[in-house]
Image (cartoon, rainbow, N blue to C red):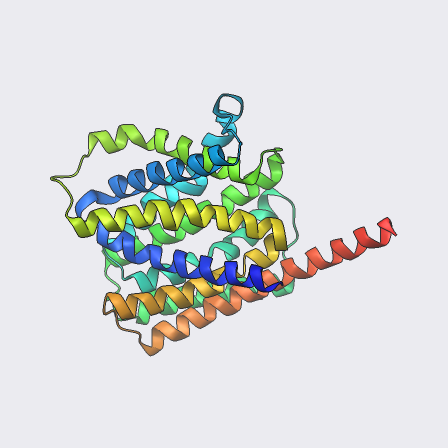
Length: 301
């Protein structure tokens, strides 16, 4: 990995790790749907502006069905679910639960794309589930029905990310990644708009809430999506997914530094199990990518 790509990877992890803090701040005043809608509108506008400067178009009329499916699975649904979870769980919990996305990805790929689940992948899934159980059952937040429901909502959000990735891979649409990022966010914002209008905030947001929502939409979604798709283009999806490891580290660190959240031994143990499980899954994906690259290179020669 080139130094520039490594810098992008670390920057992306730091930005996405901070997103859970901004969600925790914004959701109290804006609500789960309001937070997600604000995030999507600002992200879509940010990416559309970047595309305009680069001479690209969103092509909404041409790809609106594709954008809608990707937008719901990759943005609208997980953003609302994570926002609701943030009412009840610390940001440090959310980043660990978010790290289960590659674990769900292995299951979805097996069920939908026909990818076999190897013994290594099965071990990774078991480690990830054990990590989630440790975090929810032994962490500093009591395992009340509400806390468990919030954890399940966060896991559902991670599953939604996995479904979105499988859908994009299965459909194989020839859409520029940056255009897909912008179009899917615009479509997701349109889907959520009626729900956001039906449940508006009780009052005007404070300055802190406004800044948190702006940072969440512009930086943690708009800019972050552009960084992520550039990373996928430069180093491939398997290596780009290693950002999951760093998100958990940065998210826990930011939660402790800026929200005063406790970092306990069960949290560290649960997080470590999730990361080990994710590493086993990603290691399998990276090995397959390397094998395909080697076979492709041999054919070219």
